[in-house]
Amino acid sequence: MRLWIGLYLPQLPLEVFSPHWSADKGSVVLEHERVLALSPAARAAGVQPGLRRGGVLMLLPEARLHERSAEREAAALHEVAMTLLQYTPLVAQAEEATLLLDVGASLRLFGGIRALCRCIRANLQALGFSAALSCAPTARGAWLLARQQAGRALGMATLVRRLDRLPSALPPPGRAFAAWFEGIGCFTLGDMRRLPRPGLQRRCGRALLDLLDAAYGMTPELFDWIEAPTTFSARLELFDRVENAEALLFGAHRLLLQMTGWLCAHQLAVERIVLELEHERGRVARPPTVLEIALAEPTWRDEHLVRLLKERLGKLELVAHVIGLRLSAPQVQAMEPPSDSLFPDPGGSEDDQLRLFELLVARLGADNVLQAAPQADYRPELANMWVPVQKKIRASAQLAQMPPDVLSLPRPSWLLAKPIALLMRNHRPFYGSPLKMASTPERIEAGWWSQSQTRDYFIAEGLDHAHYWVYRERIVGAAADAEPRWFLHGLFG
Image 1 (spheres, helix red, strand yellow):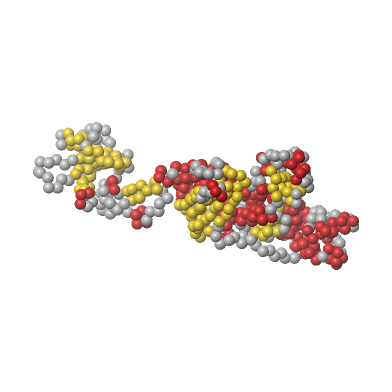
Image 2 (cartoon, rainbow, N blue to C red):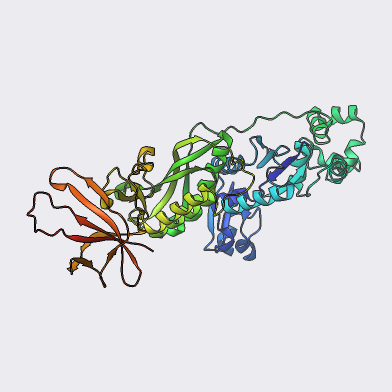
């Protein structure tokens, strides 16, 4: 099934300059000294499209005036296109701030056209833009419906009915002849299609007929698809000097959405991202503050990265105002296919656990989230060390363990950080009560030179039937009457 989504951004000039225009005191975009776009606050003050600069300042002295910039509008439209690459690799830019997406192959993956449209609207809202969205079996049909904000048409019959009701002045090639169409009583595209084609072509040119034929599915359509660059680096200039690090999350999320589209377009997953916070330039210039996040498991979704950035920015103290953001993905790898297991793993998948660890590291710090790193040493107090959870442990170290024939005794669940010397009463070790040996000894000899240890470990039982892991030091070369010392090294649950 071939299905297209058309996105028309009617307020693009205003949203490029002021993404928070709905909450300001009045934003106005000027083109050739006349009002092109304005916020609701400016409209409430009496400002109208086409008004001159002087009239705006007279009605609203505190208005924020912006000159229209074709470069910034093109960059903003490219930003939206990069974000939408996560839904389909077939994204094309059309005229008049419109994007066309071929989503026929993506419907099943995203749960149907309604769910896909909800995802696109959510991304546009996160980017700070608003758009008129339409669907149609043809690209030009989707463009016309979006341009007129005429809704969706999933079948050709519905599309034909909706297109026939659109005004005849809507297609760009026919706008120069709007007065002529009105004079002959041709008010809709349906009326235009009933006109003789040879006469319509002589009067209006071939371009108008080509557009109608493409919109009604009578001729094939060709587009130049937007291609993602080979490497990712995106910059966002802030609209004001930001003093609070948490306020940067909105801009960082916009950059992350672009990176998500870039990753999906190249079938990649990111392992490390770098966010640079750019400060003032000139005489008070400072080097950018670099925020680096290394991931335990590569990802291509923005939700987890947004949570990590929120935690890191919440703890960051800015040394100066921030005027811009730059995000790069210096370390990526090929995207792994999803798990093919029929039933989900209990307690979540390994990726879910790694995301939890990354979130804890961002919130508590790398030195406070540790993992066990086994060591090849027979001495229990040296058989393990604690390292940051993000540190990679070699496979040989993960498999480090005692030979099976040596582990004659079970190990306690609680190993003391330092062995406790035990008192001796009636030639028996004492810990709250006399201890009775409940197992055969296990001998451990390890270490070199001055750190060598020779111990005989036992499972001991007290009068309260609690079990302890104790050992007796072997005294080599001591007098015959010397008694060995006993130590408590662990507790059993």
